[in-house]
Length: 479
Ligand SMILES: [Zn+2]
Image (cartoon, helix red, strand yellow):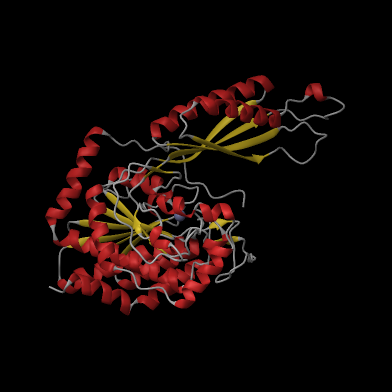
């Protein structure tokens, strides 16, 4: 049998330019949720060229696909994202803000994420092939993570059924296991319909939908005092009813994003927000319609799988950064605000970093792997990987692809998306994930431990998809 460690490392080394090209292609074709036609097609074709059987349009989503290789059990899955963000178009490899005309960019590094998971799937597939071993490798092309909960829809439609373990990662400034849970959320439109009229001549005949939106928001702002402190309620007024103050606005809407540590807590708050919306409609004599857009659950860590992933992240190791990479990172650090600089360790902690920062003194990029921590904390954010973690034992790591202090969803994150440092992080993540998959394919006992832990949780906590059955994935309407 080929030595696992050397096989995976040397496979990725030999094929690294191919993977860099895939990631850079996705970077240069940034597309927002559920409209990732170029990126999805490019990745799916790359899977076919590699010998995977690809099923496109899974879960009734055009840009979702599953690429499979091999047969029988175990079945190991890799989750890859590839969607970009509106408002984050930025010219690559710059140390200052320089927007590009597309105004859409990879401000969360999902070009690297999708490609790193794809590279892990390829390395694992080639290992199986080389050694003529049984088992199945699946690469899940998962669209619409940003504001879309693509994976939650895919879970609802049973796409992950039969998978024994799932692995994924996320780009960041840190190298660690993402051992934190995350916030569950609901995203819901509240749409009000009133009656238009001349605002000076006949205001008594008008019924203002914009008043309803404003009164609803005031009500929710009073509600904040009476929900658990971990809860978050954000809103965006997505339709003000027009730009004419001399018209009573007949249509207006507000989009709410409600978050809390557990999905049942979100549901409870959501029901109270609905009552406030009904109250606003009653006060203004407008009609209310509630349109559920998407939701995701809280993340369930699998400690046994995390430990295996951590062991393999250490095995993959870190190549020292080059002088050019350090100088570039130093300039990006200088571009951060004082608040962002102060926040840099908290940012790392959000990805599972557990130290006091002493190893980063005088540095601008991470060149270390953080010790593994079974964190009981909750990431102040949400991810649709969470719903996969309710149905398949799942573990995630982060690999450093950006300068210390780089917040996600910023021009600084976008500009670093095709750097040599980012490529190295992507391949490190691929190596750690592939080594873990190969361990699970070779050692049934390791997989048994992972599955026992998962079963113990599942027996007490049955899953129910937070997105109602009649809700379909929605594209970004307000770009
Ligand atoms: Zn992301």
